[in-house]
Length: 269
Length: 312
Image (cartoon, rainbow over all chains, first blue to last red; front, side):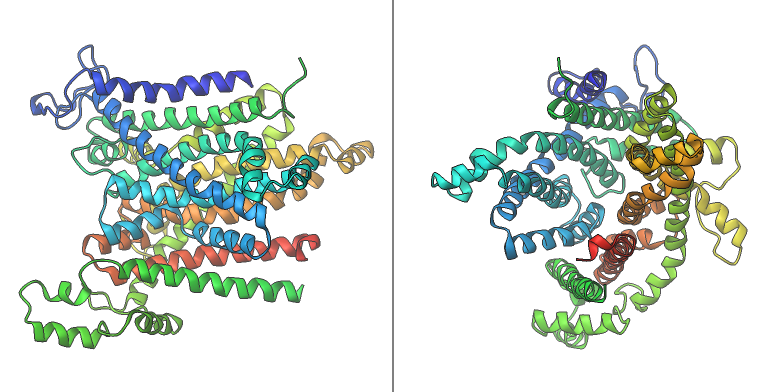
């Protein structure tokens, strides 16, 4: 499935490039309101039209990509940063520690990320940072589970025995031998969680629990467009398309990477 | 089997207890206590102290937790700070919208996913399979609230077949069902896409089994073998996923209810957050999480019923 990999990289790359370019240049200034030019359909001057404040939609989408990518990326970082060591530990030690880590995971799984976000926002107030924390916390058990599941079979292999006999401790074995062998799994899971993070961020911003005005974000653009759906469908359709294209790209990328990185699926040359 | 059930019941109790402690402590972390919020900034210190005492806010944290837990056990979730009505009653009211919505979505998702998954599995590796699976990929990438807006644009604004939002109440069953149709469809589609994918791969796995070859050898057509033998065996992973999806469905319903202005649990939570009515947030979140934990428990149990190897 080489095609999935390439198409996925292309589609998800669009958002990344848009976000990066937006730091240097956008077609128009997103802080500039021009009410006279509000809700214009796509045209030569405004490729994707304008929103209810007359802001250029393409520029808004580009700047909005920043927050989506930042939130999802940091949330994946949190999930990996805590989840991978927990999973390695659970696999290495087994016994009651394994039980505690896994039951703790079950508990976090019982809180859908949106519910975690609601609790956090109820306590700390809505912000992009709290959205990151909420999505990040949800990612921890995901990575812990994948890491533990990948590590357990490796611990039974002969070369791990050999390393133990050679006097290596569980921590060193985990880092030097287990981790490189499950890196594939983690990369693929990371891509999937990244795409889920983008969806979650959009949902949180949509209900007002994510990035706050005036920071442009895809979810909030949709929330603001909702009352204008009948008047100017493009303001509702374009941010949604941006989300779909990015998430679809990441999912394809994840599928493609899984096939490309899994030696068992690789066809002999 | 009995020992397995007892072990699972103990772990269910522990999960519920831990979840309740977690929810309680997060809400307790909030700066400013409910008494001062209820009385406003101009309140006399004596009145404030009296209300604190009346609400039990002067007790130490563990005692307050036990007090709250005792209430929860008897179905008393406290009184809303804003409306002064019992929280449990408010939640029950809202459940009359949220529960039918989630169930309708679940049924729709299964109804869409089943034929699609079977179709793709029957034509695995061929053009029909590829086309269906590509569509499924797009379905998975759709944010449900955006799909909801597109549905409103098409069916409410342009075609005027269904209402764009609101809920007439169950006194008008037909109208009520009609107003739940678009929200349920919006919730169901991404779940249907995931389900279809799981069903397809489960079916493709079972279709490679020896007993399918035997079934074909004794004269069943490919379609008959799929329906009579493969489908039943592939349903176990599908049921598991369906159970897991329940938690996504509940969370998704929170957002979708806001798109369609449905007076369900999700709207209640958001209204409570904006009014800083934390006791309502606490109660509603507790009910949501308890529902997820219970469904997971039931799925585990039904799994063990279907497969004796898992009872160890």
